[in-house]
Image 1 (cartoon, helix red, strand yellow):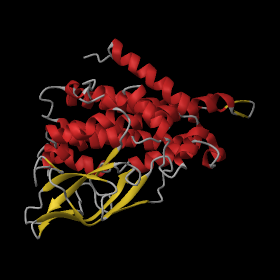
Image 2 (cartoon, rainbow, N blue to C red; image 1 turned 180 degrees about the horizontal axis):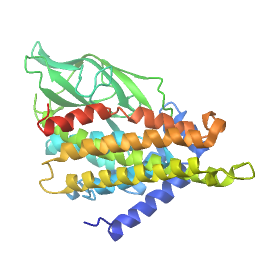
Image 3 (cartoon, one colour; image 1 turned 45 degrees about the vertical axis):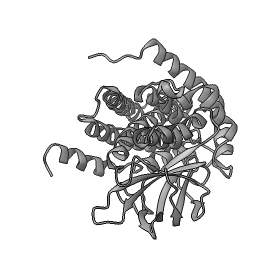
Length: 378
């Protein structure tokens, strides 16, 4: 089987590469990540509205482009190559698909057009304080006839700066079923705090819920009905994140090859030494294997019905890509020697991104266990 991009997908790839190379230079990403919000709002509006990528996976009936995970992966790969900080992943990859998967028509129409226009941002609060997949600390219960959310969510992408939150909360009964609740970030009782994070180019927040009132119509799809929708979003989010990791690994390879040509030792470029050549060749093999896993999973996600085996394909991509990015980023520092450890060089930024994304939807051990269960081995 041969997989090639369509003409439209190739054009999207070229446009995304050109745009993020323009806005994603080293000085620019450092400046953007140091802002209180962790990104530049004007660039977000350009991404969402001017380029139209806020409408990428939105159905045409909402004024969207109606495209799929393959196109989303193409853009995420280019974001990963530059590490450009923006709420694209939080809003377009996580929150918006959650609204589409679980919300009714009225809930979708209330927010999606504003996201498409670049006027609003959102994020998904789907883990507890420790950030462990499935460990949801927020609880939704009915008190005195009114729904309330209490508890905490951790490692919420741009959770301190977005306009809306899609909160995953467990019901207080014995079943502990998941509900997805759409709330304004500035609702009474919601406390957000940007937390110090290893990766300075990717802002995350801790969010506390102190008996937060849940207005009528805020529960997406009904109380306790969010398990399947959340899993659908997280599987596709893992695929998009894997594409971002491939883009980061590809950039690490490019930096390493460039340095191997330029750095002279013992009268010749270090790239002529066998140890360096083999290290770079190993990078290529890892990256191409990871890229194949990403687009295989993305194609599965775009098929109809597209669900059979998708979780396993998403886990496969997560394992391959997190490993490829982490090892390639570490090798990049080795190729650059002492300068690779310095704050002034970007190699450490890629290594930090590789380390942090390694566990965002579960570390490789988590996904290997999930694949083993799917094969009936656990």
